[in-house]
Image (cartoon, rainbow, N blue to C red; front, side):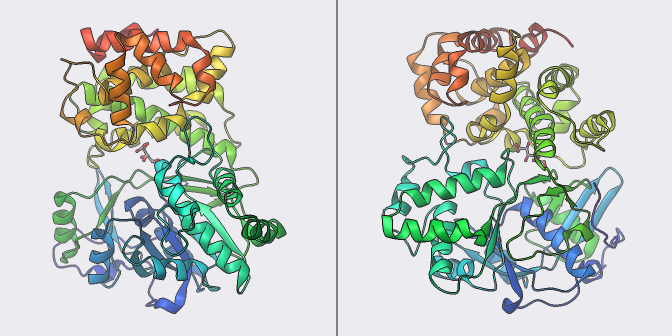
Length: 503
Ligand code: CS2
């Protein structure tokens, strides 16, 4: 639990950002050892910073080639800036600007797919890492397995080798290329908030391979099975909002240089990994990364206590008119609901890892959520709930339901999500809920239109597989969520939250 060592840029205009470079040797394309899928803010304020600390500690072939999926904006801006950008650590004490300086290229998969595939398959690439968000794994919420109905998956399995549309397709085609050419081993490193993210990625890769023609399938399966590819589990943590014009201006003020793509981030950062690398790795521990024998307890702690509670804060806050997470957490009814879901419903579903002091961890979560200088928005955390909630709600909810207890605040999380995304006619969830993006929005609207009240809507959503198969077999959970939906519609989120039993 630490931040990478870095210099602090004084908050005076005119300071050259090069004064804050975390890693000093200029890297070129030949230094690429990591190809990272997902060039978003999280990667640039997390793995890139740890890699910079590792390289500052010990030189090695660990430059990062960043690959955006479709969006060209970040990649083009980075190219125009010599692949440099600022990480602006935002806290109530001010701004601390650093430049990781670890990227060796920035590509866009949809625009230059051959270059991306070549890089993924290159013998010098020893790690393929990913931050493609929960949604980017193209898995079916119902089964947890590969979504064979996804148009991108269908196309990628249907022989689209050179320009795959999905992250899974890109990885599998590259593994095939590696297996049939140089055979150099590689680590596939998921850095997304999926429980058992390495195991889950491995399962999806295997399911993708199972869809290939027999000859290709068997050869690749044998090569992977021989230990040439590993899929370590990781727990990643750092709150990283989207960049605003205000961030660009603040960074320009602090450093004297205009950066089009700075990344605001909280000071806190944490990374816990399985040390199962097929072809070595950077010395990320130099940046504070922790290598543990069993990462799962850390993942559950983080995905449930932080991410799960975060979702409830975002949906209740948005429904109550809050633009930001700090604003929402400052509302007593939201903080109360957050404490209840965290202590009473998420916590009993996990084992706290040795060495983590729970009280300190939870206090720190609330401090992080109330970092108002950061301006993390409810619409950001609330977006893609259909992929996120599948990771957060079902297992803890089932644990309580099987023990004969109703997890009211997990039901409230689902209810608030559904009111944000598919409100009943005549109910205005507000601009922040309206701005949430979610691939399931249309589907939820259709289900809402087919049903008459909250309980029948919630039941239809669960039957549809939003939270997996099993929760649909507990109809009283849908009924409880549905009652809370109706309460939100008639009396608002405060009344609904007050209805749920207090801690
Ligand atoms: C958030 C996460 O958007 C979300 O769902 O809960 O992005 C959260 O900020 C990070 O996981 C913190 O590490």
